[in-house]
Length: 103
Image (cartoon, rainbow, N blue to C red; front, side, top):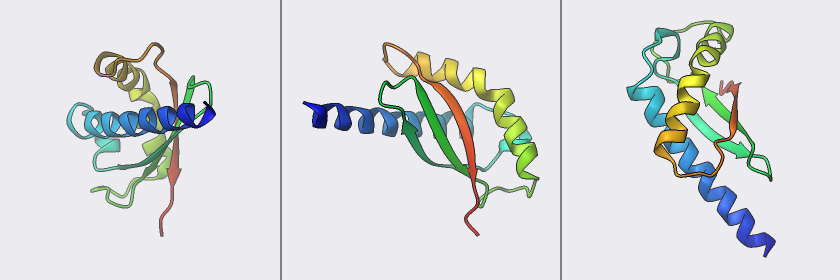
């Protein structure tokens, strides 16, 4: 039975990754976070929290990672609302962003 839960959380993490990528690229208008890439989503076992790894390597602007983090924090509520609307989940996880440096 635990393997089924593992597969389900992986599927949900993939859905969240795709949805956040779509929202960031098409609906968020903040210039600080234009062109960032979602690398992955790590869900806690109870699926209440999601760590989203992002990269600025493909970013059109070369802002300080702190500015990008501020932009993501400002858009966090909007992104979570869109996740709730577009994914049919019982509970939408709280999201946390991590900036990965891929140099």
